[in-house]
Image (tube, rainbow, N blue to C red; front, side):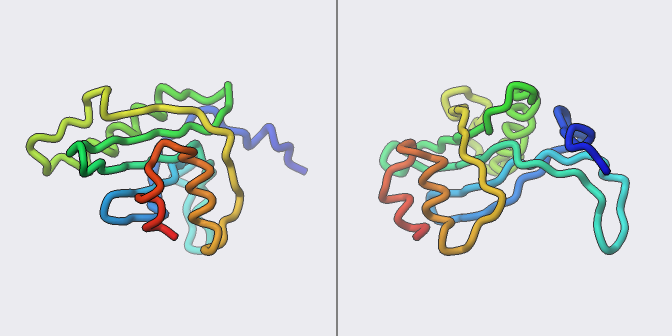
Length: 147
């Protein structure tokens, strides 16, 4: 029998981002850490995957500003600096086509810790789940587009 500690991961070979929701002014992603990426077969890819946090990108059209929130799931053993670095690189690559947009600027990133973690998510619960994660950081009008 395998012990959970054997599979507990503190560092990751790679990171990936899975979009859950996209509207005109709002995007919500899961930040995933992946290990053992070479162990692949056609039934199960063999990767050890863990949800590390959430990325929320919000366009504030009134102030003509794009803000990215990185919500890291609280865990003292994780390398949050590495997770944050890869998340910033992901956002930068997504927005390289915008000439006047520099996501490297710290004012465009807000990093927070969260204790919101959910193993499964039904479609009808997506709006409530996102509201729990973002708390009051995103205006209600932007969140209403999700529901």
